[in-house]
Image 1: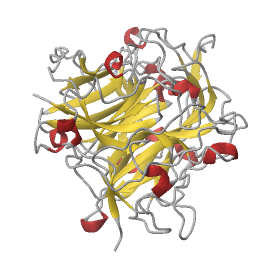
Image 2: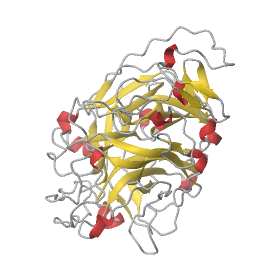
Image 3: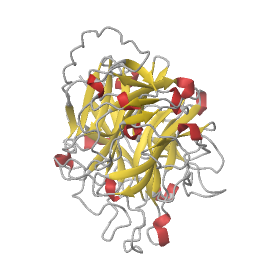
Length: 477
């Protein structure tokens, strides 16, 4: 019988109230392979785990340290990755025609042949939702778990959760992680660009159980490198399209039927904290529950002219380098930002069966939903947002959006429609209280507040201090 172990439990919340002031250590080095990194005491919810064995004096340098992921000082607006780039006066569309790029899409003339519908009175943005502060419900990776002994993961971030759309014993929640470290005592620290977990716990209320890995088993805990191995392997490989690629990192994930889609970004360089640049974003596809992945070239969005040889770029696609997915009304909505943490939120949508066809996407513009005209897309959230997630809450009867703002706080907005208007923000987690460098709040699709079975919202949250992923809980009104 396959052994199952808990990686975290919501029961931890009761043991840690008030949890936020005491649940986190003071800021430390950023990843488990930094000098002075020490494993933290195991959670009381993990009694069968032995303390993780770590090499505390690694072979330096940590080659793949994603320094740009480190949150910038609160109140700091990360630099615009496109500062100094001259905006072209016109865009060439896929049919070969050209169209002038306006200074402000909101005041531009409509494209030829497009007759805008009479403007409807814009609905007022809903009021912000008042909530209590979020608390820690458990952990997915890091020193509080046995992820190293079971999956050779000493540290990983993100943990983007999504429902795989399966049935019966194949119905699972999948989790996509970013840069992943293993044994710090070997050259390269067993680094991988990305890894994947699977869990049969559809609801996170009682914790998240990840089965043991089993090579070639598409419902086992993680894809691994070979028979008998516990080494969680990289699942989305480099496309080798560019020479200056540092890593490839998931930013969003969703299923349609039982086909899995992960949007990822190709990082060209890590900048200062909160800043990085990309070569392109693209969509990886899996038909075997995340065991193997392919990337159609039709899904590639370059970040700039000539960023990817032989791949056509239209101005405005730089605003869809990091993304969040939402399924609603037969569409997949794509909320996009520029690389790093200094961008506002733009919106596109596509029919569910066309996710990998970038030319099938419609952009939210002043003239309605238009294909090709990415440079006419308007902001749906003007705030500086990063690593966001969006879902529909059956409990609230509204769409909800989570992200970290320029104060590095986790905030939530709500809306009655995918395009908004979006409410003002409600703070769920204050970075100054946790003091660990938090980022990337990703909504868990099995949260009672999402499914309508209660008011509890769960989300994953990365912390820079020990490069781990927590499971957070907050009760919505």
